[in-house]
Amino acid sequence: MYQYIDGNLAISVNDWMEAGLTYGQFRMDSQRGYLEIADRRTGGNTLIWVSSIKRPDRMRAIEAALGKAHVEQSDIYEVTVNTEARAYFSQYAKPDGTRLDAATVERLTMKASLFDAMRRGMERQQAAKARAGKKLNKGEWLKEMLAWQTRQCLNTDGAAYGVRPYTNTRSLERAFKAYLSDGYQSLISGNVGGDNARKVSRKVENLILALWRTNDKPFVARVHELYNEFISGTRELYDTETGEAYDPKETDSEGRPIFVELSQATIWNYLKDVVNTTAVYADRNGHFDYQNALRPKHHRKVGQYSLSKISMDDVALSRKAKVAGDYVEPAYDPMQIIADDLADIERHNNELHPLQKTYPGMTRRDVLTKQVNPDLKPMDMAYLMQWIGNVTETSIRNNDWCMVDYTGFELKDFASLNRLKPNNYRVTAYWLPKEDTGRGTAGHGTAGHETVETVYLYQDGVYIGEAENREKYAYNECEAERTEADNAAMLHQQKRVAKFDKWVKERRAELPKVGHMDAELAEAINTTPLEVVPEAEQPLGYEEDEWTPPCPLSEGELAEDYAALAISRL
Image (cartoon, rainbow, N blue to C red; front, side):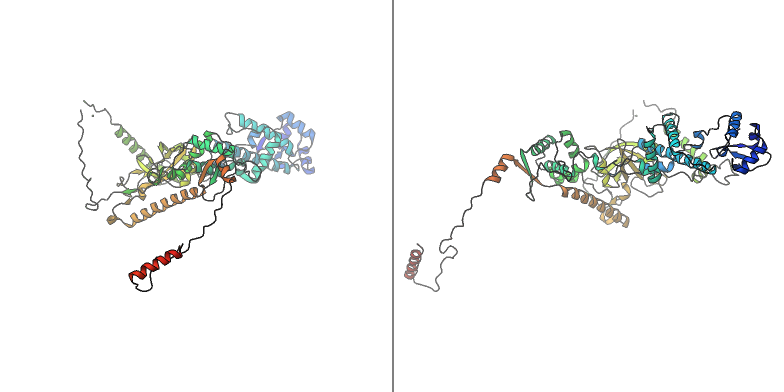
């Protein structure tokens, strides 16, 4: 019977003779190079590569006795999930900062796994052909691979289910060669997350924001109206700082018009973009509202010692409600049940592992944590947390933080706001608690309490960014009590707010200050010549002070001189 060795067919000398061939024929063919030995053994068990048998009559006899010599593709083209590819795609960031969604990660991972199986099988077949003095026919091989990959993709039980199969050998060959050359990157479309997705250019976006940023707070419909009047030529827009007028017929380097007609919905999307809204909020609503509504604030903790801070509102009276809470106690307390279960699990995990000969002195938990498969690749926590983490629906407040599990978490990077949808601060937080080591943070002062250090924010399946527990950055509002740790926390918050201000300032700096007027009025102003009025000649004595005589005069002399002066000035 046929034997598979590294995906290639072989038969023994005993199989050779059972097919009606003689031992002498075997020795003669071996000496003359008509076959190749795969492995020399005794007792008639020496193995012969089937693909190396060159005499047609020998092959006919063998196939008549043992059946058609055919290598099943499933044996040499085994598909195994490439965990390294999954780690690559789960951490891949597009040019705009967003990450691939979970479905795309899985699809690209399976696509890479298919190509890996093709590569391994191709190398095995090439080696087998080389041993027989032959070469792999690439054309025939690609046809076989196209059929094989189609079966893999369409088989609902297969590992590659969900991957779209190639339609012809040319496209399969092109994609396979690109994968061998460029690796995982070749499977990602070149325009993913690029500027091609933008409906308007940056210049147009800045212009509509400039129309919206004015303190008369125009509605989106008014901005849409002003913009369309501008591109139709009935309204002129100009930069109030430079005096330069915008040209509605301006084109880019490829001759395409820059200012194109936009729908009100498109303008709304750009105006309500979180970053754009933040950049113009102070201009529309005033700096005070901006500080309270959108600018991150310092997070502080109250003093713990008496007389550190005295205030007139320190006294608060409370009254406890009387329980009628006829209340009947349940037969079992749910919290007690949960506590018992957790204790059982903890006890089980810390017992010695039953295979003490293999793992001497190790507990079940020790074996679990130390006996990790070294071939497994680390997964990105933001991606993994979608499957194993707790889920909380929350909102980003003040462009700064969100509340999760009764704790505030501040954005690790303000660039996360770029990935939010227009006018939508709602996000989904994925998180897992970990045991506190007794840091003594506000509200969590006892060791053994489970805290959450980091949450991972998504919006409609799109990764937004990380947010970290802000309690560690809270500093004492009482200056007399501040420690070095408080000063360090205060410096962190000051730097963070400074980064936010710089980030908003850079966005604001791009926006022009635009004035507008009716096009007919602008035309009239531009065509009416200015009248030049010559400077009038100053009258005699215009700049002279009131006359003062050089020396004291009598009353008569003074009157006479005033009269002479008046006559001289006629």
